[in-house]
Length: 495
Image (cartoon, one colour):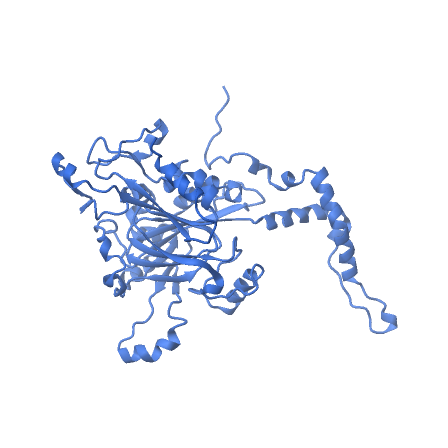
């Protein structure tokens, strides 16, 4: 029996050596865009509503269109990798890149059938990505990637425009300032624009790349859907844009997130209309000498991230970090304010005492890996992974950042409630008065001794709570033990 694609993928993972390898696993989703070479798969009735056929042949296989409202969103994003293997082998460990690529084109069979060998304006050997897979998101929720409307409907209070570094006018100026600018030239500078129309004019006229959050409806669907399917934060989500929805703990929730849109400097209504460049040109001289390309320097995030390329092409370079489950990001590419640097380093050094603020071998593990994202491609990368991003062809990418409460926060917050009801001494305000230097050191209030006594009783309190009061199940909010209904869903009445 010939092994399936899924079995081949599984065998490769199971036999992988236990060493620090590539930070990203690249999986190719081969799609039969020409309507041949791959037999159509049988789909369930529920799957057919989320799929689309190519126009070339009625026998073309179905491919899933990414729909934020679909219960199969994560399945479709990860295809052909199953969710089970994703969670078992990669979630919070490796980056995973799903690339949409056409099947190898059979020239002889193609001419025998007399079919047009061009697909979407380019030959199948030159067409990468699949714009149709993200067409639903772009058309229904992002106004066909019209930057002006996106700015007007964003969830952000402001639109951020990235300022390009100054270009040296002469070689002499470049040589004299090169050393002094080495450390800061890669740092991003941005301005916040409150008025969306002003932001759009500056974005277009000044060729400034833009950043903002997605419109509320799209953000709510994507974050809520992916929190449920990954289980982050117990899968619970309180949409900040839905004031009528009641959540746990008074507008707080264990899971949260946001959807970020990165809009290239060449953005506008022509997104998606230009043919993809030939593979040979990616990363070549044309890209390197392009003064308008935008690069985001090395940094880490503390969220779990899913990036979907909607248009254009981006080059990602990734490398493993040496801190798992970081509480804060490391952002040498953007902010160098003393207070921010101090905060990030203090938190990081709780895990690694010699952690630094820069991207170097001291803060990383293993090798660097470069990948290219085309429309329809999906990249998952875990928190703490170093990465930099370069715009090869202007377009729009969308990143879903998922975050939630840590176990430490859950336990400590719950323990506080337990102690406040346990004994009046825990409710007492902290008081400490050093003893008077005179009168035989009398009149003091030894707060250290008082705290030491309370801490001595803490193990017994926790033991009783664990064995007699439910323990872990009592710490978890009851709602987390049941599947969450989506906002607006109505429970079916029993017959």
